Image (spheres, one colour):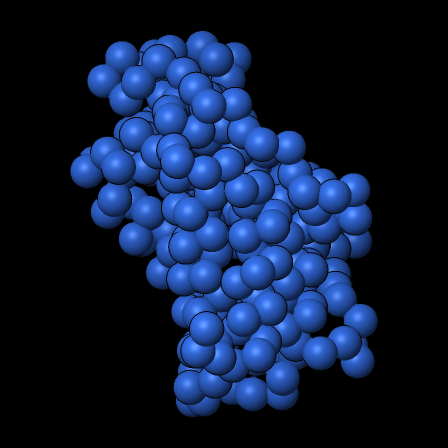
Length: 215
């Protein structure tokens, strides 16, 4: 069986697709590192390509600019959440599965039971906060989040036996998970507090699973 045929039959990406995905993420992570450490206006596509050890032409084959490159990491992480959700035990309650999947990708140390994730370096936190406030990035994040919610809704539909196109439930849960994750990231980046992301996510999912009771 040819590699492409095998990939289609198993539902797993072939070697070429995996390599492309790895290159996308290498470029995305390089863009994030440089923009966080040096500031949005001080980073060029040439620098990002050099950081990822590829040519500028390769960068242009994947992304139109640094905003799209940065947003790609958000989409990739949420796609991994969807994959992890489908890999959870079939009898596990949905919200438990979602919490494990999200924590495993957003705060792996906390998900592994090693306590709260280590507080982020203040300089890094400040850099991330400034980067996320960049107007040029906002539109790309919105597009990435829409694609991520669509894939997560499909995974939730498979877990719950619902239809992602006809039923409201999987779309609603996907939107709530995306919003809760965004709130957790924003809250953990606040300068006046240093609550680890894993702890904030755990708190949010506990409240969601309980139906958002009034404090």
